[in-house]
Image (cartoon, rainbow, N blue to C red; front, side):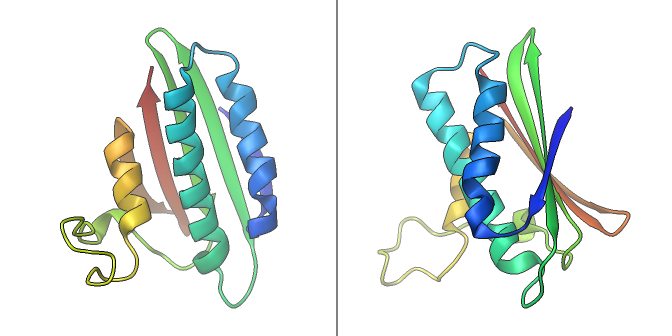
Length: 135
């Protein structure tokens, strides 16, 4: 798995997206799949940048691995911030209007519903969130 270590800051999003896009160039990836992955990466990295270390700062490690057979990509996000399992939260109720819906949770809901596998674990003082998308 190739990795990229960046400060967990929102202004690093383009660097993270470029790293993932470079990996996606190695496999047959439709524009729709690429967009789903870009949205998931943005959501997950921005959450780390916004909440993992607040009010302090820290680093995030993004790992990316592409498989040719069967074609898929696995992207892993690691941080040493506060332990937080976004998968443990109740899914956003998308039947409610935006005004009636609780704030938060819609991004991880979109990630869970657009990826083929989403896993979280807390190990060795690290939050580890892994997503996989089949092509």
